[in-house]
Image 1 (cartoon, rainbow, N blue to C red):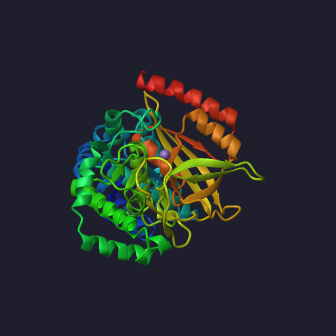
Image 2: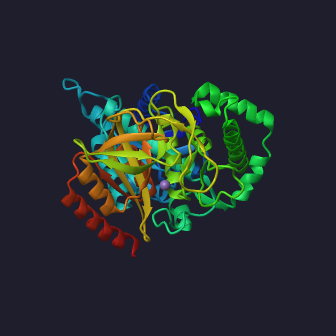
Image 3: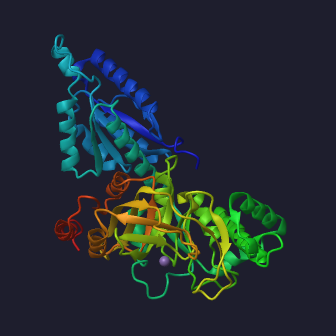
Length: 499
Ligand code: MN
């Protein structure tokens, strides 16, 4: 996916017939102008104007149309004039697409010297959107409420973030995840209820024996391998043993065959995310390293050790971040530096996405201490510095919980000449002790989806669309309050879900 412009958000304006034709024409004109204005901004999807809605039937028809329109990922609603909200009940009851309530008005400034009742009646969203807000609250509609003047940067930015979350939600509704082998034996947090995930989040997880993948790898031709190896040589600084004539050249060719086979398998099955496990590699020469890294860079979701929840999350965050600066990757909190500023060294055995790399990755081969297969080929690099987020989705048995930590990626204190894997070094906000204690209290996983391009707003919008719990650990987090939040949420979900 190069961009998200093939996706539509419908811009819906509510009114009523009370005012006669002239004001309604004005309402439509203004609404159109806002849509044209928004289209010129950095909103990643196509905003589509819809005729002004003045009756319950028209509203219901529009919501039903939105449900069945394949490229419609959500609605933005605005009440320019008064739209009695009982007209919205049937439509909102039927609506299956995400909803954002834009509380704005057409005019920026109040025309103090000329304002009369005609102007007041036309530009009355200040109270019309409150009437609409009530029915949203009464019906417990999952929605984002965006307040401000439609040309202002904060409004554009909030709309953009929500459309990205809606695009990821849309993708998740048809997402297929291929799972080679099972979860790593005895591991708890990577497990979960796949049926509940499909009901709640949309995606489907389908298991395959690794032999199905091996068959695809065996189908790869020498000519295809030659071509991909040439691409590796273009893209990376290739280590001496992997170069032509080097004593590990065959390992590079094996890695390329795995990438080609895996790619063919995923493409033919329509999968956009996958998992593997080092405990189940029968017939594969090595644990997929560079193959997984490059597939992630192309937008595939990935979770190691059978972690399908993180695979789905990485995919969702890949979709959310299309066109933004910075990368998104599968990640794992690996080890700490309790030196002057306490930091985390994040990495994985192999599978970190080169989209987060600073500089050209080097392609290397090293032994893997677990898994019992041949040495795997992997791209090695360090993530660029700057703000980022780490996100985890866990299954608590009666609900899904998303946990996000805002972090600051920093350069390593010193070079890491003997570390044979891609890595990122970061300082969690507000600091390591509070962030990690909060994370552990919340049951956050060791696996995460890491992103330099997304913020808490994107993920919170996604969690709200999905109707799942969202916890943010950031610069203002205090542990005592965070623990209260966990207790309150526990009570809330108990009441809401009844278990
Ligand atoms: Mn792991």
